[in-house]
Image 1 (cartoon, rainbow, N blue to C red):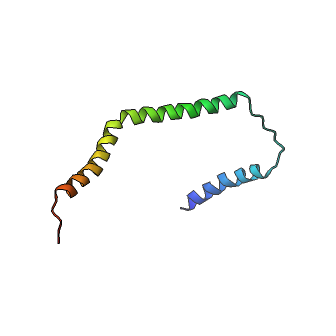
Image 2 (cartoon, rainbow, N blue to C red):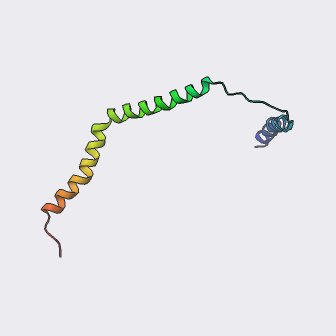
Image 3 (cartoon, rainbow, N blue to C red):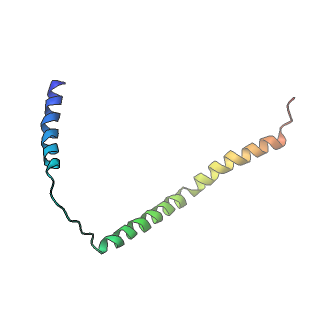
Length: 81
């Protein structure tokens, strides 16, 4: 346990020292970044639709089993006193 805490200290302390040194930074977002983000969103939606299509029968069967079986039971069962 002691060895673990020393190694953590030896790795965390230099990282904190480097992070504490403040330098002025300037960021530039390329115009192509917007199109990449748009492509990622469209790709995610397309992927979700494909997964939904692949599992549609299972999803439909689950909801049919959940709702229709309950209705059939109440329809055919005698009321209990």
